[in-house]
Image (cartoon, rainbow over all chains, first blue to last red; front, top):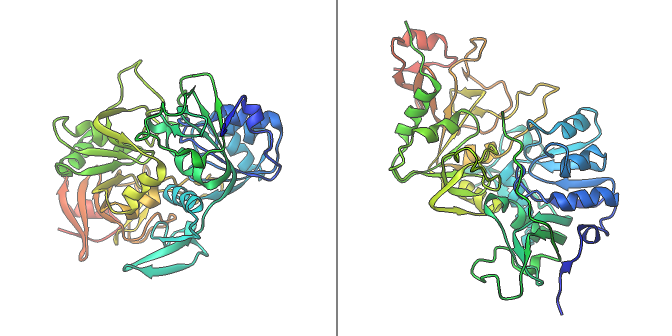
Length: 231
Length: 212
């Protein structure tokens, strides 16, 4: 029997090793799988490379992971926010490496990894500091930059409902990076607010097919708290 | 006596330039105001790169749901017909040329349409780019909405950007608090000026040659 349901977040993240690359879903606070990230803090893995759109909000989840000194490198598009003080401090102290990636390149590099694509050319970033040193080519009459896939050992994502085969649905803009990250990691761990029986999810509405998901953990429902916005 | 356009007057001008049925992405900051000036009966579809098409206005107080936010991480609503999608699809909409217009803020715009809006380049500044580079080159038209000069009175329209670039030759129109300018193959053309402003005065606070 295929049963991807895992009882606790702690059990789900138990095998994250030192030096692992961990994708963490979420844009701002929507879709941030903080329960898994908090479990990872307790688990103790170090020297992590984290892939997330941002670099933590407030004092929980990814912000706390950075604050605890567990992240060696972060790959993200928008680290600087009103409440990114843990990242800001670590970055200014030289304790964390930053690979800054345009947001669409971040999504597409993750997608490429999940789809088995060895890289792609895109006009995004051509002629800017973020394309320095990268291969360029003129294609379709435009200068384009070669971008490489981003693979991960683990992906942590927050979904809404799931079943024991790992099929997932999401809630509004909390979907964001979840579906692409799920494809790009060796082990994808999703939290859901509801576990339903096989067949209960409308097959026309499943966003992430279970093939991309290895573990599903049910968590207590809580409303997303805002963060990251300018005052 | 020149009367500068207020932020809302600037936003109303941008909104008037957006055609019926267009799909538009409004950048963080000043461009966000444009949404308030698109009449509700008009079918203008707002895209937000975090994964929404058909974004509606801010919710009333107490109705905020932080799973439904815009790119500025502010709570928004969804119009009937609105949809959600993941990030790779969202940026495919941009990079694939499916968005009609994006409206971005800027530090500097050069005479040739080069845009600088993501980083001041200062040594102690923490760089953050978000979707700016994808938007600048991906939308069919990239418009900029910004103050005409810096707080210190320096031109933000410049011969060449001195801040790090976001995109090359990507801006086609600039809305400022003093004028509406089109960037054309023959140069920067003045389409409209604030009341009481004459061409010489506009040229004096603009770092690139203007065409009447």
